[in-house]
Image (cartoon, rainbow, N blue to C red; front, side, top):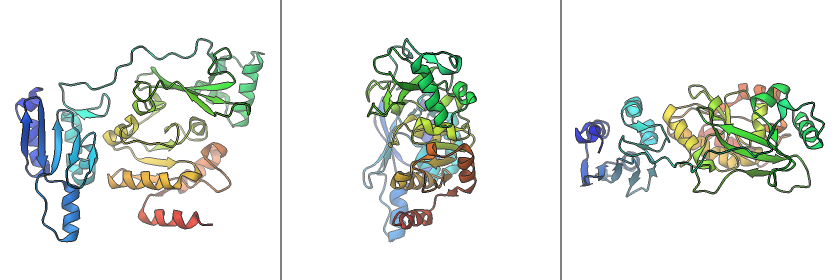
Length: 340
């Protein structure tokens, strides 16, 4: 085990934060058992006695589970942000591995390793370098991007491209994504032809692969985690936002995702700018982030637009200024508005 487990500093930290607990298990498979703060809070409301030491924290992986209320997670950060915010920075600095945002400890790297580096299709053409290229596929893609409000600056900033000879990406605009050190970590192709019913085709190799949506943050290289981060649904929404933005590549936002872990690690303020038909998802995410003390604002997309992608950049910036912090009152108002 790592040295700080051997000398007891992690156990001391947990004792100080939770007010004490017990350690069970063998040398390489320890559980730290303590009072669950969720149960403690609920029992206090109900006037019940607090149940003892039912929250198990697995060491060194960091998985957390309460055997009474069922609360669980991949690491301690959400619980610390919710109940013990004074301990967050010490936990981050001393015990938490930001490598994959999923565990703490210094003796075990659970990061999924790629078998080989992800590559763009062989026939990839960066559109910013081929504006004068007469090939019909390139000119069609440029016209489509122009119709969506993309500028010449956007062509370079988002590295839009096409791969006319690629079997999977024909008549699609490829939107690449790069990790925090600039390596390609994902790409998706968006159809610009009405003949293709499937809007997006991803490079995703399956849920268990390194290049799945769970294991990447789209355009992480451009994110400043210390500033408010706008979260949209799809990559074409990005061009209407300001620069500190990412997308969830669809409607799912899992607590097992790298994006969620990064937000929790940095305490990044959030602006949710999801599609107008995702009010339930927006409300759920707003409630979740606010519950863990992550400041979360909600962008009100005017009803004449389905999503941010249909707005102009000016309209987005105007709506952003008016965005309100999520609250139970916002949730109720959203339900009322959905009836009209």
